[in-house]
Image (tube, rainbow, N blue to C red; front, side, top):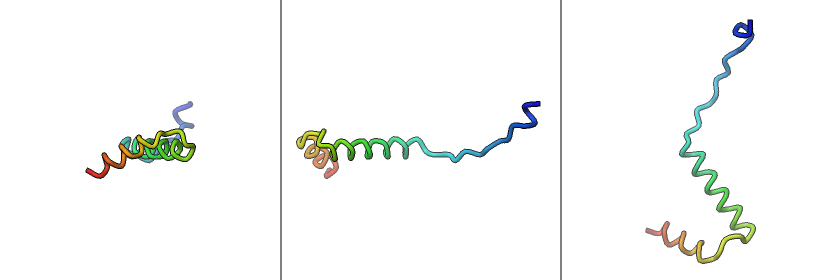
Amino acid sequence: MLQSIRRAVPLPQIPIHAVVCGTSVLAFGWLLANDSIKPIAVYLLQLYLAF
């Protein structure tokens, strides 16, 4: 009886890579906004992204 009541709801397929990237960017932004990250870490990130 429960099988006849239950409907299949399609869930969107979200790539895990997009979720991980978005989470890390938001976390870094949140830490940066709250001054919880050292300026040297920001400098090292900029240096890493430059190359």
